[in-house]
Image (tube, rainbow, N blue to C red; front, side, top):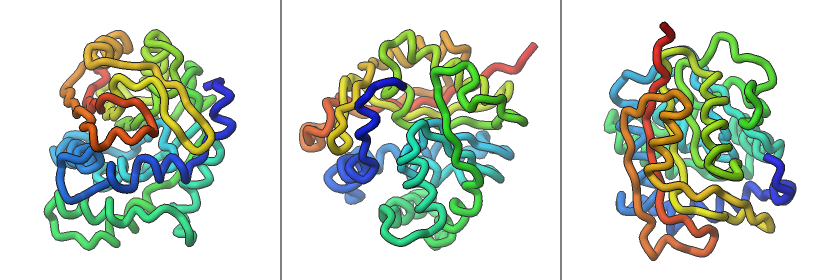
Length: 260
C-alpha cells in the first residue's frame, strides 16, 4: 500500500462522505448502506459462519460491518494499515466522546435482525469482543507479520483489497495472502466496489482497481476460495455524489476448502 495519497487520508472525511446521508439513509433499502447491512445480517443469521475468532481485514474507521458478525464470535480482531484508522477505531471501542455516531446503524441492524434487542446491548457486545486492533499489510504473504495462531474461523473485509491493489493481479495476490489467516473450511465475507477508479478522503484522492463481477469471481477462484454467493448493487444517480466514481457494490460469501 505504497500510494503517497494515504499519508493524507482523513478518517473523518471518509466517514462523512460514505456514512452520512444520502448514502446512509435508513428510510429505504434502496440506499446503499441499508443494502450492505441487509446482506451482512442475512448471511450471519444462517448460523453457519461462527466460531472463536473473526478477523476483519482493513477495518478502516468503521464498525458497521461487524454488527451482525459480533453475535457469532468470541473475539474480533480488527486490522488496518493506517495508524490514523486504528486510532479512530480504538477511540470508538473505548467509548471516548467525539467519535463517529454509529447508533443509527446499530439501531437499523437490530431492527432487521428482528430479535427485539436494545441497540445499546449490541453496541456493548461489539466493544467487548473487539479485543485487538492490529496493523496489517495485505501485500505481504504474512499480512500481520507473523502467522495468526490459531487461524481465524472467518474473515471479513469491506472495501479494502480493491482499494489498495494497483491492478487485478495484485488483488488476487492480496486475497490469497489474507486467506492465509483463515483456517481450512473457514468462511470469507467480502464487500467491495465495482467499477471504481478513485475515492476521496479529505485531501487524499485514493486510487482503486476497477472491478467487475466477473473479476471478483475469477479472483476468488484464483486465490483458492469456493464462491458460495455473490450479490451486487447498482449505485443510483442520487448517490453519485462526486466523492468517488463507483458504479456499484458487490457482496461475496466464499469458503476456503478443507485441506486434504
